[in-house]
Every structure is written in C-alpha cells, then in structure tokens.
Image (tube, rainbow, N blue to C red; front, side, top):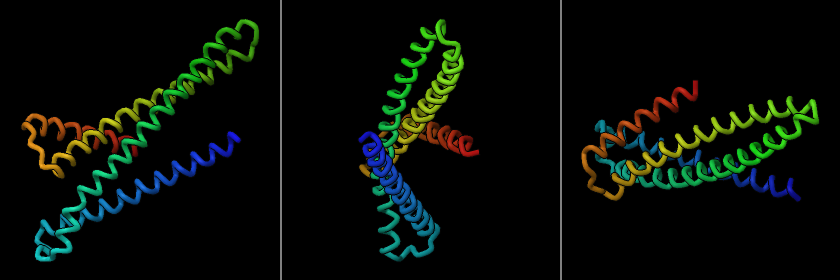
Length: 169
C-alpha cells in the first residue's frame, strides 16, 4: 500500500513539474514576443502586443505554483530531517552495544548534512520566488511602492540570479 501511495505522489510531483516547466516555457516565449515589440518589430500588431502584455499574468500563476511546490518540498525535507535526527540519536545510544552503529551513524550524519543543504537551497529559492512574485504583482496590479523597495527587489533579483547561475555550474 505504501508503494502505491508513493507512486501517486511521484506521478503528482511529475505532473506538477511538467505544468511549471510548460508555464515557464510559455512565459519565456511571451517575454520574447514582448521584447520584439519593444524593439519596434511588429509594433502595430495587436496580437503580438496582447501576447506580451499577458506574459506577466502567466508568470504570476507559474510563480504561485512554484512557491507551493517549494513549500511542500521544504516541509518534506524538515520531516525527513527529523526522522534522520531521531535515527542519529538512536544510533548514538546503540553505539556502545553495536560496533556497526558507528558506521551507520556516520552515514546518517552525512545524510543529515545533505538534507540541511537542500533546506538552505530551498529556502533561498523560496525567497527568490517570493521576490519575483512581488515584482510581478507590482506590475500586474500597478501597485505604488517606494523607490527603496524597488531597489531592494532589484538587489535580491540580482543576488538570486548569481546564486542560480552558480548552482548550475
């Protein structure tokens, strides 16, 4: 039964990933069309202008789905961290009686470090996505924000771009 539930979760996660990737691709295409119209190519085309103006709305939905996924992943990672931490405590108690417990303990400690790194990466991605959502919300809803907030959003966006680029290499 547990395997069946895991298969449903994997299928749901892959469908969610497919949806986010598709929306990101559509948004990227719409952004490119918008950029082309800003350069004066197809400026008179109402169709191209409408596509470009709707890119932010698609990006808004994409960000909401992405943020939801990041939060779910962070919750899953925190639960996993708790389970591994409990196993570490158990192995520490068993270490006196079982010589293999030390080896198992080392493996769990490495796993715990990996989980903590994943949590940190997820938290940074959440901050970046929330920043992007705030930026898109300002554009879509035509919100008035102080200049210092715009600068802060720009700084966070630049920092996230550097982080994401360094993560890929």
